[in-house]
Image (cartoon, rainbow, N blue to C red; front, side, top):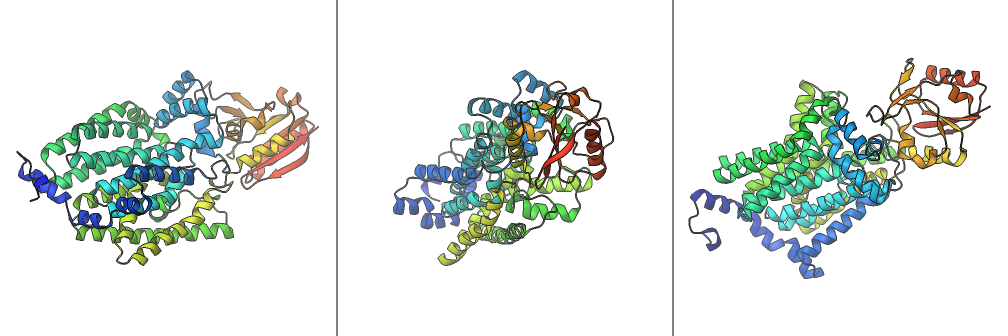
Length: 546
C-alpha cells in the first residue's frame, strides 16, 4: 500500500475505504486531468479555471433574461417580496411558507437592486454559475479531473440549468446548494478536513431544505450513498455516524420551514398526470427541456424545432449517462457511481411513485437540484468515449442540440407563452392617468367574487399601470395575507365604473365566450363602446370608451 494511505492507527476499514477511492479512475485522471491541460495550454490555475467557468456560466444563463416576459410564478415572488417585512411574515404564515426564505432574500435584494426582470433573475444566474463550478469541483473531488471540464461545459448548456438561470424562484439557489453539499459530503467521507466538511454539509443541508423542501430528498439520496459505502466496507461506521449527525442537525435547523410547508400542503405538487405523461416529463422535460417555452397546445415550426431538439438531447444524454455508469463500474469508482446515481434517480423515483399511488407532488422544475448530477454523468460519459474525435463530436452534439432549446427559452414568450411584457407595454403606451382597468377572471365562473384574475400582469409590470384605477379589487392581497386578494366581476352599477370615461379590459385570449358576453354587456349598459384591441398569444386588451 502506498505511503500516504498507511497512517499510524489507521483501521482496516479506513485503509480499504481510501484504497477504494484511489482507483483506476484517478490514474486516468492523472493522464488526462483537465486542470493540468488547462494550465499547460492556457496557463490557468484551478482557481482561474473556476473563476472563468463561473463568469461564462453566469453570462450564458443571464443572456436574454431582460427580454423574457415575467410569468405567474415570478409574479408570486414579486407580490410577496415587495411587501414590508411584517406583511411578508403574515403572508408566509398563511400561504407559501415553502418559499418563505427565498421571499425574504428577494425582499432585501429587490430593495437594493430594483424589481426589473434582469434584477430579479440575477441571483438565479449567479446560482447557475456557482452550480457549474460545483459540477467541475465535484468531478475533481471524485477523482475524475479528466471529465471535470467536459461536465462543466455540459452543465453550462444543460436546458434545466439555463432555464433556472432566468427564473426568479429558488430553484437555482437549491441546485447550487445541492452540488456544494454533495462536495462537502465527498470531502468528509474521504477524511479531508473532516470537521469543517461535516459542519459545512450540515449548514448547506439546512439552507437547501429551507429554500426548497424537495432538497430533503437529496439527504435521502446521501443516506443511501453512505449506507451503500458502509455495506461495501468502503466507509467506516464513524464516518456514517458523522454524516447522520450533520444531516439530522441540518434538517432540524430547517424544520420550522419544513413543518410550516407541510401544513400548507396545497402549495406542493402539481395537477395529477398519467403515468406515461409523468415518465415523459421525467425523462425529457426534467433536465433536457426546462419548461415548455410556448403555451401548451400551441403549435408552430419554432415549437417543433425545440421540441425535437429536446427529445434528441434526451436520447443522447441518457445514452451518455449509461456509458458513464458502465465506465465507472468497470473502473470500480464506487463512490462516483453511488453519489451520482442516487442523486440523479432517487428523488424523482420517490416523488413519482407517491404521485401515482397517493397524491400528485411531481413537477419537473422541483427537481432542478438534481440537474448537476445529470451534467456530471453526461460529462463522464463523454470522457469515457474511446477516441478524441468522438469526445469532441459528443460535446459539439450536446451543445448544438441544446441551442434551439436555449433560444426558445430566451424569446419574449419563453415562459409557457406568457406575453405580459408586451401586454403591459401596450397598455402603458395607450392609457392615460384616470382611466379604469378591469382585470378579468382567469376561470369561468358566475360567482360575484373571484381570486384568480389577470391582475398579475400589473404585479409584474406596475410601471405601465401607474395612474390607472383598478375597478374591481375589493380586498387587497396585503389585507388578507394572500398573493392575489379578492376581486369582483365587472358591474354596470358600480360607482367605480361611473367615475371613469375609458376602461381597459385585460382578459385571457381563451376567455370563455359566456364570460366575455357578460363583461361586454355590463360595460355597454354603463355607456361604453369597444374601440381598440390588442391580441397576444395569451392575453387580450380591449379599450372601452364612452
